[in-house]
Image (cartoon, rainbow, N blue to C red; front, side, top):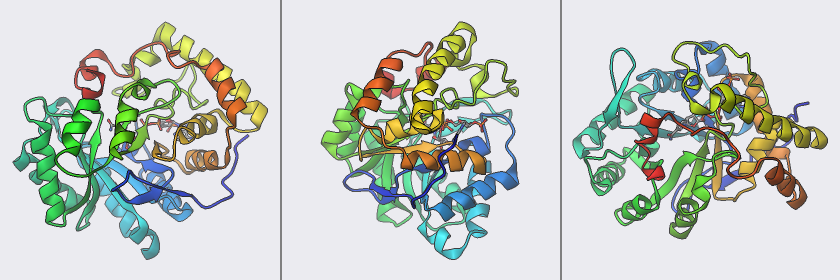
Length: 342
Ligand SMILES: NC(=O)c1ccc[n+]([C@@H]2O[C@H](COP(=O)([O-])OP(=O)(O)OC[C@H]3O[C@@H](n4cnc5c(N)ncnc54)[C@H](OP(=O)(O)O)[C@@H]3O)[C@@H](O)[C@H]2O)c1
């Protein structure tokens, strides 16, 4: 059973200096990359439906489909009703270096590169400013102060409204916040990815930095829709993500079955329970959901009507304890790029 949204989407402030955004953001990555083919018309219809429902935050990266995702958002915004377009806020990641074949070859956070990335993104998005701008991964050769300083200059010039960070640890949060106000940290956080709870989340809270949580469904793994026999397209991230392999997948889907028992008792879906769990972790956390079809979006929005009381949260914790997942959240080579894991 899917709880269909009854209320309009509530809002949450993004940190103490960021914009007020819808309590759920729409992550558009899967409409262009990483999870196999997506239907363009359905992707645009999903963005329109999200805006119509009151979602204001659209998350993207210039490297998602190497510009494809920004052009898709451009088209969706151009064809949306004026009021919806005017409410929309863009959250854009940059810095990943790509090859023609689609490979990833590193990150570039040099100040001139930051301004170059921004110039191209503004063109592709067809807007005169980006609402939140962040480097996707810290460039190990460039101090974070320089990268953030360059975004601060873009803010000064009116091309960017707010500065964000992505997948950084507590020390980097402090160093960045010493340079300029930071609106939010975008980082993976879900029932089965909880490493931020120890140090990163308390530091973000101390500094007044909000969190946009991604992977709240662990890329579909804990959505309740992922099955052992799912065929994945070549290049699908899940084809090489440790959590989706062999015995790890079996173990993790067993956890989903435990979650399903709790969800069914509440008359909601597994995905709604997983999203509601993240929403319940604090008003300063805004989950991004990677819906790329309207039916998935409707399901995700239904999470806003799910209340998890203390007994529900305890039952979820017992069914899926903090470190219950089998397998790391990224393959080893990608884990190495995560400042948040060092
Ligand atoms: N900062 C970073 O490093 C970083 C990294 C990754 C992502 N992100 C951002 O976070 C966003 C969300 O991440 P994500 O897409 O990996 O995470 P996600 O929301 O955990 O997973 C999305 C996947 O879950 C499946 N799903 C099943 N039921 C769903 C439902 N009701 N609603 C939404 N999805 C459902 C979808 O698969 P089917 O379409 O096959 O049903 C979709 O591919 C991305 O779009 C991107 O903007 C940021």
